[in-house]
Image (tube, rainbow, N blue to C red; front, side, top):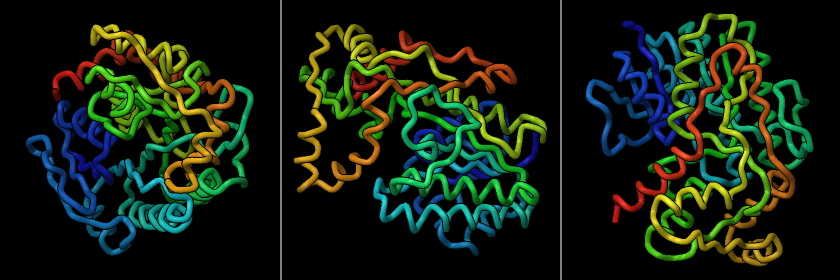
Length: 311
């Protein structure tokens, strides 16, 4: 296919999407403020700040589809400013070009829930980061009469190369690979859904290839059967040939550390994801597309061993 697909953001999910598109012979342009250290052969790059509308319009020119794979510094104050501006700019570009949009989204917009998350749950208006994600959701929904837009809602993800961006990253599998104890900021024995990054890339491409009737709506990312962080950590530790030693920081200690560490303060409002089982209902996506995701028995060892390869 000769259509041009513009990927805004080249973090883990943007990279996984780009690599899958390139492997299929697709035309891809990556856009962000700074050029990545490396890009697959044949992928073009345009420097653009997603907060600059003119730059977004310029980069999106000629695109038939747009992927939003953005990540901003984990700050509620910052999010209040940048997320609505970024969404407004991309919606303007999509309307101007007629390009369809696939958004690699999160699940914050539901706020605290006790049942498995479904796409028809109401959007929250409480807490800063969840409310911001609900606001940008309302923005694209309001534009759905003018822009073909699909949201892929993804829980916490894991996979090789994530580093500090994953609960199983540098301080977990990375520490085990160095013979140290893993450190986790989550409750280690609480069931929690995680998505494997290569699977996320596959799901994005699935939506890019879907007909228009898949747009104007949200889709939950399929995940492997729910496990606890401790169980997932044990799978990676076994691949490394080490004991799954684990230190988990309790919430009260995280609050104390938050007095001096801004990131710890930012985590506080999201504790509802970890003080109860956190499950994602992805039956809608599974019925329409596929559900054969990477099992933890494959994904956890792959991530853990990626740290051994770095050593």
